[in-house]
Length: 187
Image (cartoon, rainbow, N blue to C red):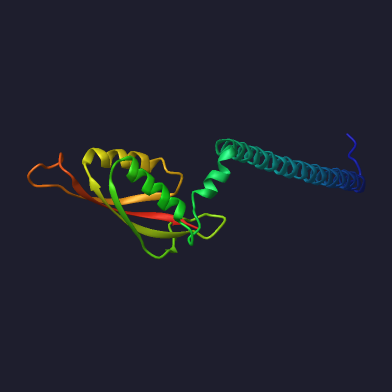
């Protein structure tokens, strides 16, 4: 058998090695281009997914705002009027006096100076609170009627406490004295 020449074997191995390196290098180059393209497409897809999520969230928020505005509807002016001006609470006083008159109660009312109301966190204008004391004379039945109507007043006011002084002899049936402490929010 004829043995090939060592030079030719080396040359053949060298050519095969060069060919293998060229094919390997071409493969690595193609993989690099393809992986870069895949990464770009993956990043683009992720970015589009984020934008779609933000758009969905924005649409949900817009729907919530629409439903909130629908609830408020024409009540915006009414809500603004719920805060009487701090220097003119005569409408509130007149409404409370009218309640006392309708319930057949004798009433005196006293207000403190307005102070800032930090409990009102969000408002388009500064909100103050003015505490008030109402002294009433009447029966418990008339007081209940008065309080039911007080709840319906178009002002942002709250009652903090009610003290009752009833006659020890006749109790609830006789004329009693009521002391109401509350807060009126003003602008």
